[in-house]
Image 1 (cartoon, helix red, strand yellow):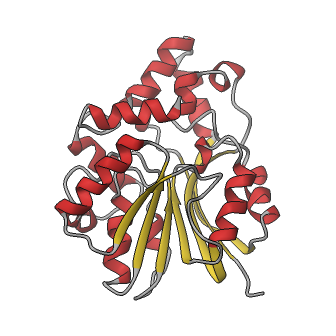
Image 2 (tube, helix red, strand yellow):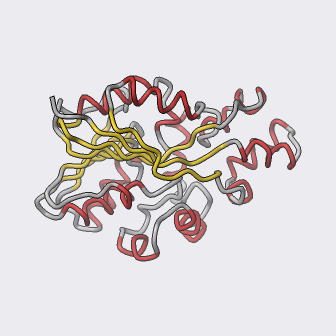
Image 3 (tube, one colour):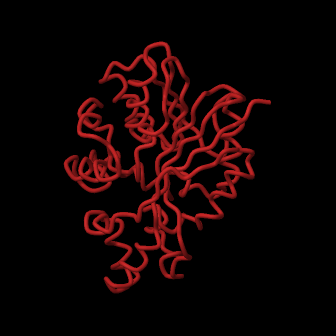
Length: 262
């Protein structure tokens, strides 16, 4: 379901929100700078993120970075600028059309230190103890088995490696109508879990020094721009007041953790 939905986004050659200008406005509202959006290849930003994990990952020259759910490559290309020609960025996505688009963008931007691999986050196509930093942007909420996803991230990180994720979590449970909505799942809403459960899943995987760097209410204006959000409201026939109340319980967090040396 998720794979098919994101394939359609690529195939219509637009963003989740219909055009590049809107996608860039959304990205700037969640932490991307004008300069960052200008240096990446056109078409790499689809407006699908809920934060800017690259800005907070403290990437260093020569590091190997793994992006979980890399989409069209926006965060991979920004990471590549940080780690330099001696570093490497690996993007993993389960949608073939996204991988194809990301590879086209990499070629267009002449990125020699970025590669994209088709695979699922619960079974990462990455060797044990092989990467320095793992980033992800509004993707783990779409994964059915979140504990497995964090276990795989832990496995792939080198001892001393870092996890830096932007994602959507809940402050309280969603109404049943939204929880059951297919569109809400694809739109990163009903797939989200309670914040304490999310943090517990990271801890259970073995990560230490887990911290929430930033937490903000998911911007209510997204409901006005996002056709997926609009379809949810129309489909389940909830009032605008109910929609706003639900939106207030959906938050974007930036969370980090460390795989301590063994």
